[in-house]
Length: 90
Length: 539
Image (cartoon, rainbow over all chains, first blue to last red; front, side, top):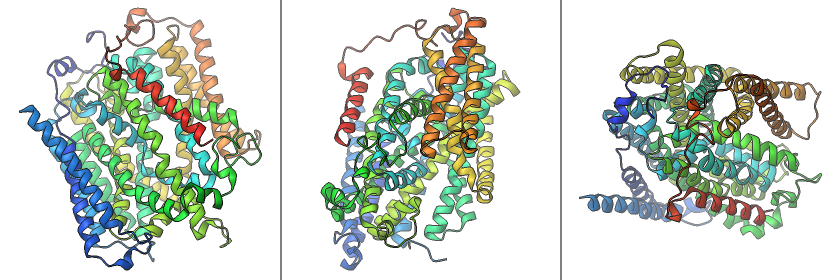
């Protein structure tokens, strides 16, 4: 089927297709996990050290603390999933 | 100038963290971008969940989010039509029926399919118009971002432009399509995390849906009930919404726009490619949560919308006003980062689409043919630089000629609507010939443009600009459809051998997987069923 596909004059595609190029090289769960966990930690701690007046606009909820904890949990779940996948491979 | 919002160190830390991650992701991909297939197509190796989320995120840019929140403040719940009628069916159709030809033919771009299926003229028409429009869109994204952050945060316009362009340039030159896709997936999570707090707080303050019913006029709370009446908030009736938005505009965009299709082509196998838009359709159904609810909340809660201040509110400011109203520093930084992420990944998506079409369909087809793969990779990287520079230039042009932004979406639809007819006939009717495709597309585009001009000079009358757009798309599609068939009947047919893999009837059927949960048809049907259910619930 490779021969039939005209590749507008570009050589080398047969080789690259045979050479199994690996485009997917990053386990995306890792950067997502780290980023969300870092955000969760930052917001959570910030939520703990700030005063209550700041949260009048958010209807009294300490959203920094609450959402921070949520993000830490979600980030942690991604990291756990990445870790488990890595262990399953080895 | 007093900024609307003031950010503190914590907010900036959040923004900086994201910029750092984007650059690191790009950098980590640098050494893997060896061949053209790596750089432009992610090696055709990505799993369905990544291509699916990227497919959705490529479309869920900041302009879309801000624009849809504005729409929901203006039109109420009817805005959901842009999602439940105007997206889901097209996405499912693409996955189940069109992907086998797109992915199975191993074409690398949308114009390349047109070259193989129709002829060089059709490819050229599409490639050149798409390349120009997409790089302009990138500039418009850049402009919109810089203007917004200048007004909102006092970030100097020129600094925002150069900084954002530099970051996108870095990670796209290093990591190609993969960089763009990975960052889009990260953007997906940030958008939800950044905007959901507004939804929760808003619903709490309004008092849930009962609160909406108490505070808002009834036509704003129904998506279908008032479509046929004089109180219709959209100003467009049944036919316009279903055939104009739901069929032509929606299918024209989702099935032919290379920006989104490119993500599916990066999948690791045909099944993932087919599942890509279907996987994307499920979160797409939920997007109204973060764009429609805030608009309604703004109407119910913000003083600017209650009508007492006298002046007509600027709808585009809706989301920003809500952020200022509810979010303390910290969460504010997260929401701003979510918007920044969407702007930048939108720009990156446009640049990678431009670069790929330029390299393969313009440079490689008309300027320098038969060069080595490595040569084209280098061309691709340089095209990225040029594309970014043109985007910056465009951003400054838009600064002087503001109307360009409004026209861009309109112009896209002039091209997408007829292109859908070209693809529909090309993929499902063996008899469509090369010149049929070209003239159909050309006449379709001209029809769309003329229709718009006639409306603007008053020769055609519609209930609203939106109605004019929907009907214009419908007529353009119909014109392209009829002309393609007509011209095809009188011009030379293609050799069926050459069309193998490109059209229904000349392509081996894909064997359905024995496991029901791996079949695109199953999930696609579920998506359609859910969309219908949602339409009924919020009618």
